[in-house]
Image (cartoon, rainbow, N blue to C red; front, side, top):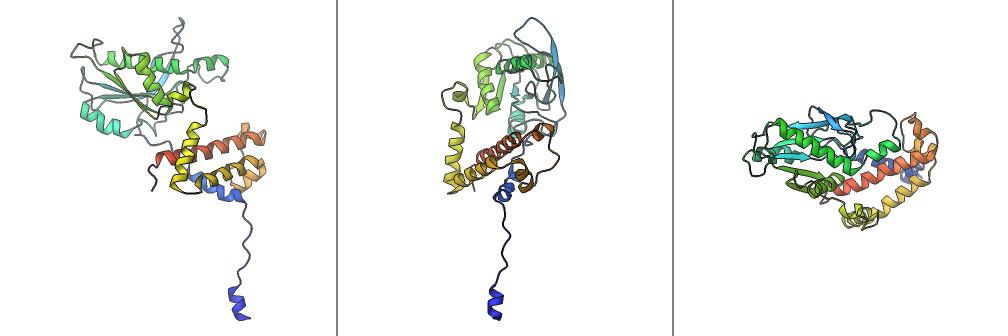
Length: 292
């Protein structure tokens, strides 16, 4: 009887599967991977580059000029993307700022994409059809060019490529900013001398591949790294998609009260959580490559 008692293990309380899913939340990659910097503000940016209104707004940007060699030295344009760039993030790509810029005596500038962070062409008014018509890659490209021209003028850079004081401009970007970087060179070859476009989804924007192609590649990569990983993630996503708000709040231990736009129904909360988990899955797979 004594031996039987020793071998007895009390039943483990049932754990909701979503409680295991919650372990993924701390793994959501941080976007704060840049070099913290003091923000600057370009007050002469055009609200609409393709109209005659002349209205301007103030665009936040970042600059690193310690390595700049003066007229005749290059300008590196790091392209901002679909998100705010707070000072805690500052300049993306430490390799560009800390290695390439000093070695080439380059100036580094990085504009924040319009309609994100502090770069608001229409102020803090609600987004409407007019605002959306100004939130386009074409406008973002023109923003970059106007800032580049302002920086060239402020540093007495010649605009003639045959001049010793010409400051060649090279753009850098990854993902959507990578697409913008490539398009800058294509659309404004008289301003942008070269472009580095990492993981630029050019074929997706050209509608030459279907919208979930990226996640298919991520899924295959994850499965190669850890057998069963992709199936586990798919199961977790289905659990989130099938749960109601009360279950999600309880089992994922989410903070309350929820923001107002999430409180009006479970659908928005589920969509937000699914987005968080998709980003975690895709970005961890992408950023931690090759997997260890």
